[in-house]
Amino acid sequence: MNASFERHEPNEAALIAEMTDILRRKMERDYAQGGTRRDAHPKTVALLRGTLEIEAELPDELRIGVFASPEIYDCWVRVSNASGKVQSDAVPDARGIAIKLMAHGGDGSANDTPLGQDFILLNTPVMPLGTVALFRDAVYYAIESSPLLLAGKLLLTGNAGVLLGLAGLRGTPSSPLDIRYWSTTPYRLGPDQAVKYSLQPTSKHRSRKPSKPGPSYLSDAMQAHLFSHVATFDLCVQLHKDGMAIEDAAQRWDERKSPFLKVASLHLPTQSFRKPEREALAETLSFSPGHALPEHAPLGGLNRARSKIYQELSKFRHQRDKRQDLA
Image 1 (cartoon, rainbow, N blue to C red):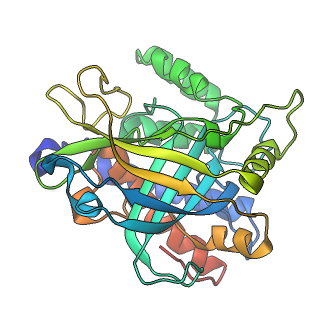
Image 2 (cartoon, rainbow, N blue to C red):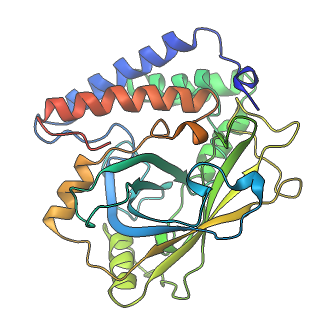
Image 3 (spheres, one colour):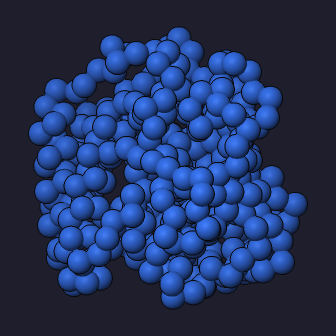
């Protein structure tokens, strides 16, 4: 696996610049200065403190980057709803989880230094809008035009499966701590390999979905869980094999051909996260596929687009609100 495996789409840079401009203008319209939310995943369900413990006996092909030795990293874990607007947890939606590793030597406070490695995951194995061109169409039609026109274009261009995929993203889980997540997009594992990531829940405690979910039922479920029980996940990698797409995130990598392999354990201790200082920190931290060590650099068009867009819009958001960006 090397740089030649990546294939940029026609007009990719222009498409990314157009999306950045559209989303920046939307943020200016939607939010008053001083309260600018993210363009994507603006609703924080929880910001949690945790640790990521690397497995002690990994095979040589996996002992790369942060997985090179059995260390324990402090981390911040942001759980979010995927909708571009802040809405009730009871509205069916995709759910995201983002892990930010912190450098050693911190004291577990908001003043710790980020390591420069994030893991960004969603509760779906694929991204139906798997190319930069489709991503651009979704941004343009959802904000500047009409989602109905996007649906029509997808049907006319033979992409009806994208509509089914987008519909399948939306759900109402019992708790974000009870479900599996995937990176959907690939990343390097050293110079010669590519992987996708998955978080698989391993907690003994499971939440019960309320009969009538309220507007903050996901946060409620997580706080009830973490009042008296820890939450745990396995972080796993799936190695790229011949025929597995790098540039189209809508194509799922076959787990029968390349099963996910555990590389670390995510541990979320009991904690109370509903605090003003924790909510403020959630808005200060930024998460991105582009926050990656060279050994884990993002691959593929969607990652190139998201890395650039997130970087520009995070800078805009924090400058607009006169706030430090903790990347």
